[in-house]
Image 1 (tube, one colour):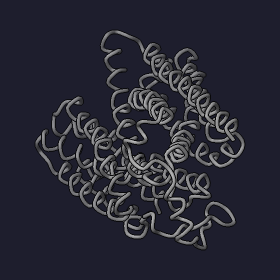
Image 2: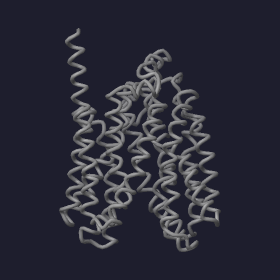
Image 3: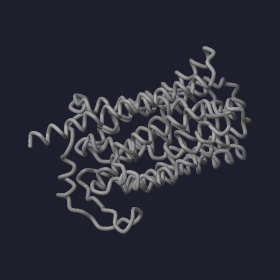
Image 4: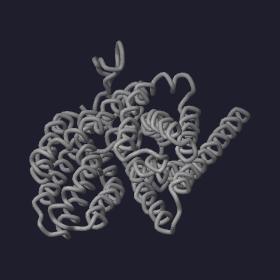
Amino acid sequence: MLGISTVGTYGVGWYSFGVIIGPVKEETGWSSSSISAAFSIGVLFVGVGATFAGQMLDRFGGRPVQIVSLLAGTALVLVAVSAHSLPIFVAAWGLGAGVLGAGLFYHVTMAITTRLYPDERAAAFAVLTFTGGFASPVYLPVAGYLVEEFGWRAGVRLLVLLMVVLAVPAALLVSGNKRDNAAPFLAGPLQVTGKATNQDLQAGAGSGFGSVREALRSKRVAVMVLMFAAMWVAVGGMQVHQVPAIQAAGVSLATASFIAGLRGFMSLPGRAMLGPITKWLGIERALLVAYALMFFGLVALAFGGFAGAMAFAVVTGVVFGVVSPLQGLYSAEVYGQRRIGSLLGAQQAVISAASATGPVVLSLLLDAGAGYRTVVGVAAGMVAVAIMLQLAGMRRAGSAKQVRGDEL
């Protein structure tokens, strides 16, 4: 149910916006940059609201966070699609998409999942993110059809209705409160049955950092968050600029759009590989390999022509599918369950800021006369920074384990 909810909320709050920019501009005459401001405000507000949502999740459980976010976000987006004033559209969409993201995106659903399945977290994350990975394959074509048939205002209203239908079951039935029972996965990751005891879950919920301030004093946490930020500068930047960057490899707009769509589809097998990869390599090494492959894919796009663009789509598509859940697993391992909602919320604030910074930085480079090879190279450089930080974090963790072993 959490994964299905994610399909709807990411579909409206993240993916559908790119479909409506053109029709909004054609109908209203507003500039592309002004319309895009609504999306940027939404991304930033996800980060701001995520900190508050995480604290509410730790205090009251996931159900009220999901319900309030769904109601408020839906209302604001509906105000935006009825607006004939640019400031009202930008403010309402930005706040609405921000509220939906703050209370219903992965930092919330992963925190809930961490509490529900403390002993089989990788399997649960695989189901959550594989299901959520259908947001792009479902919402992009559906949005295109509805907007083309009914206009962008009616089309978005129908997309919002679909989102509500997909999100209501999880909002009403899945709490993820640390007092709830944990349901183990049996006979495969899609079959859920049985319940653990309250004592078992309380024992797991008591581990980890007791506050955001305590976590910030940890060098391991600082390195991890900086690593994620560097990675999401690259991911956010390429999310906006991937189609023209692929075009720069010498292909038409239609072909570039197809290749970008292929990249989104390839994230699904990446999510399906999460369980086997973590069992084989462990979370830290799997994350390092994923970052290295992301770097390779970006370099291929910058210098490989059409073949490089296809390699970029396949490699980084698969990697993007596994990076997000791997980062969630790594965060849960570092933070523990005690204040997982607050900590993932605060972390999401940093990631959202990085995601919003990436497109701006790459756009400034383009405005200064840089070509797309340089732009993609800068994105690859940020991934290289993430790789170096991950290596440093692994060395620090290994040294700490060695010290504890010597003391024992």
